[in-house]
Length: 206
Image (cartoon, rainbow, N blue to C red; front, side):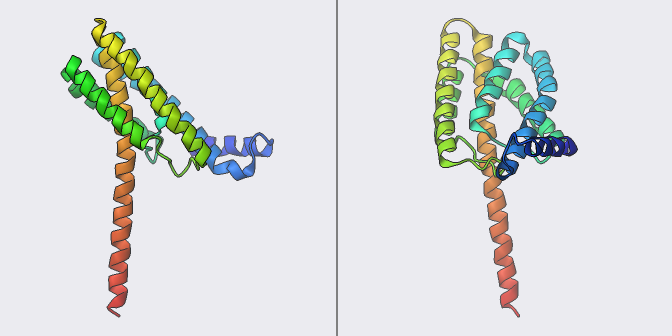
């Protein structure tokens, strides 16, 4: 996949479709879209067999649509992305899904809204978001979350339980991916700080 990404990046820059100064942004964008295509089919098939179409379709749609604006955890390889996505999907559809009643949906929607309101979007190093782009994504992520939650509540109290639980699970997985990205960043920063501190201590011994 890396070879395909590099060929596409080279083609776009050589033909003047994208300026060379935006090479990192272009590479990240192409990589994300190729990985998304790679993950989509098994992701949907697994959801279909786990919870059926009435839940799988809203779960699939709400998760991927919301993640466009929030961003989130980004695995180091396409295979890692597929594995983590499927594991998270199993967690939310096998463990969380059966727990969702009207009260559970309200609680999950509230927690997800708070998480996305304060954390989204995750500015992945490959994105190189400007302040204007980040502000636009902040508004888009909040607006999309509100729309999805309103639709979720309408379905919840309109007797469409499977659809409501699918939307709630999709929102929750997008919010979890967002939080996971920040947790991973914190761990890397903590480990780097600890390593630098240990190196300084070693140097001070000489």
